[in-house]
Every structure is written in structure tokens, then in C-alpha cells.
Length: 286
Ligand code: SF4
Image 1 (cartoon, rainbow, N blue to C red):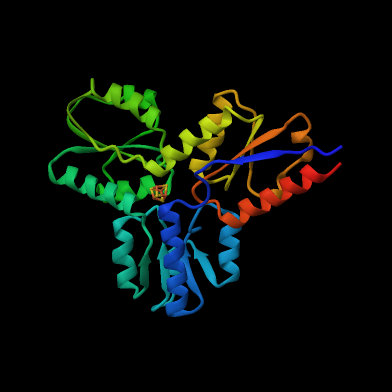
Image 2: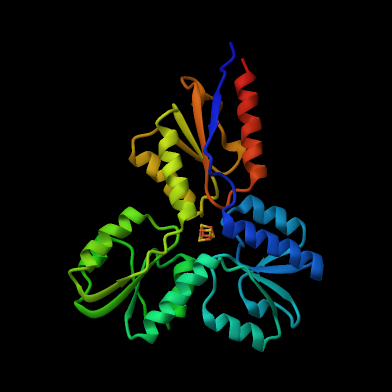
């Protein structure tokens, strides 16, 4: 007997604006400079796409010191510490800057806050490259807050200005800001949460109401993909987090008629197509 899995795809899947832009800059870099060109770390949090790029001569490096003078280096959408630009210039590295314009906007806000003598507060995950790059633009003096407990532990401040990691939960940021209002006399807030991630989360929750199982596709290191999955789990929605079609277990669909499909902002279309193909095969298996 056929399983007949009905798949509903979220209206927001695949690369976001910033990742599409980074990929376009890589293609332009390849066309203009040939191979190899380099990326600082993995250009996106998707190992399958990083491998595909590697096979085309786009090689990740961990530091600018690994490169020879004249090498072409793509900076990823998360941005980098300002010292990095100086160091690359000194070493004669040709940079192609794929920092997402929304991240650049946060970098400008922290510069403005510094100029106006506000203590910079970044709401986000301090280990995330984007937060580290913004912190660098704040002269490495920023206070980084990820939890309400950390917000409660903050000393009283006269002047403080907030920016938020673009992929952070706006709801969680709001809870933290509520606490900051009682800690900081003059509080300025820049809501820098990226609308691309907000729309994706809203669409995922809406879709999840109509399906038996959510499939969340994306890199395990991708914070926005992990958040989509966690959001489904927190809402009590059956969900599976996969990187590739190979991870799909057909038994997941034994009692399941309708599957919702959502992805992180760094999940390439070809991975999504592979998953759809696999679901189609399972649907037609006995
Ligand atoms: S999620 Fe938003 S901020 Fe991040 S790269 Fe994509 S468009 Fe830019």
C-alpha cells in the first residue's frame, strides 16, 4: 500500500537575501579572478554547499595568514572584526566583502552609539561570528547578553544602546529589553532582527498547524535553522531536523499524511530538491 505523503512547502525556503548576495559575489569573484578563491571560514553554515563550492575552487581558510599576497578572499555575510580589514590590506589580500547589508547596518548603529557615548549592548549569542564582528565594531567593549538571567545581573547604567543579533528571537529580545529598561536610565534600542528570519518563523508556525510532521532542513551549525526546529519542538509539534535527504527514515511517515517543509536561510535549493525527490520516492514505496 502506498503511503501518499502530501508535502506542503513553506513560502519562505532556501537562501535569504544576504546569502543570495554572498553567492552572487562568489560567482562574480570566480568569473573575474579564476580559481582558487578563498572564504574566511565556511562561507555559510551549510556543509553540503561549502563542499560543492570547494569542488569549484572556493576554499575555506581559517585566517588571512594562510594566504599569499594577491589572493582573493570573500568575507561571509556575518561580517568580520574591523582589525581584519587592516590586516588584509597590510598583507596585500584582495577582499570581496559579502557582509550582509543588514549586519553592516548593525555595525553602523554601534559606531553611532559609541560616538554618542552610549555603552553598547548586543543581545545575541557571543560565540556567533556576527555578534563577534559587531562587538569588534564596538571597540570590543560591548556587553553581550543572551539570556534574561544575564540581563538581570547587569549593573545600573546611565546610557546604554542595544542592537540585536539578526537571527535572534524577537520575543526573547523583548523579554531582555523589558529588564534592561529598569537597569539603564537612558536606553536606546535598535531593533536589528532580520525580517527574513521573522517571516520564516511565522510561516513555519502557521504551516505546522496544518501538518502531521515538520521537516526542518539546514546545517546543524546554522543558528536560524536550529531555532526553527526548536520553535516547533517548544510548540509541541512533531518535527525532524535534517541536513540531507539521506537522513530521512521512511518510518517517520508511517502514521503521517501531511508533511510541512521549512528551511534555514542558508539551505540551498538543490538540497531541498533532493529532499522532495526522496519524499516522492517514499510516497510511492509500498
Ligand atoms: S538572515 Fe537576514 S541578516 Fe542574515 S544574511 Fe540573511 S538577510 Fe542578512
